[in-house]
Amino acid sequence: MTLIIDVIHGLIKLKLIVNKMKIKLNIIMVLFFSFFFSCSSNICDIEKLDKAKIDFDKLPQLVKDTLLELSKPKHYFEDKADLLNLDGNYKLKIKKIGPWIDYLLIIDATNNEKYKLKRGLGKPFVIYDSHLYISDDLNMLVVNNIRKLKFTDYKLK
Image (cartoon, rainbow, N blue to C red; front, side, top):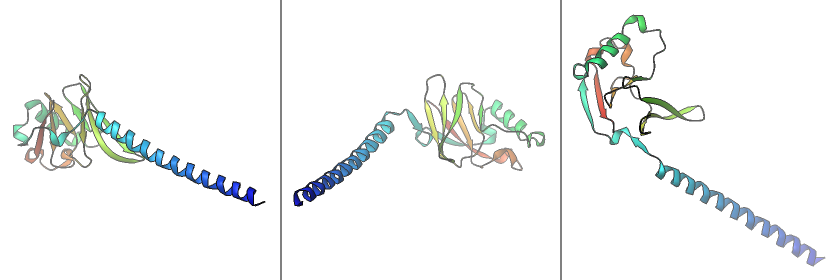
């Protein structure tokens, strides 16, 4: 009888050891894959790009004309895009964790370069001549005077 009890205890201990090993293996796998994918991605944080602060008047003429047209009252109730892609070869992707926005990606379709943008930046984002223009105001199209806004000009690769 004691032999059977000892065997059962041994099996229980063995099962506990195997379960602990599985947990450790799962943790190691998660860490490995998160490290592997974070190091192998070609995502560039826009804060690491060359940038300059500029006034509205210093924007390229096409950008100014487009923003002035979109800020007119007749456009207030239209669905406005978050990305004004005046170059034509960029797209915007929203990366979520569940229902929450984690960050935004601007992807260059010609070379698959990806630019990471944090949440809470002024919209719409404007791309023209390989420059990304982001307003310092969160929603530039509904301010009283768009000509008084300041922008950050990021030089895309």
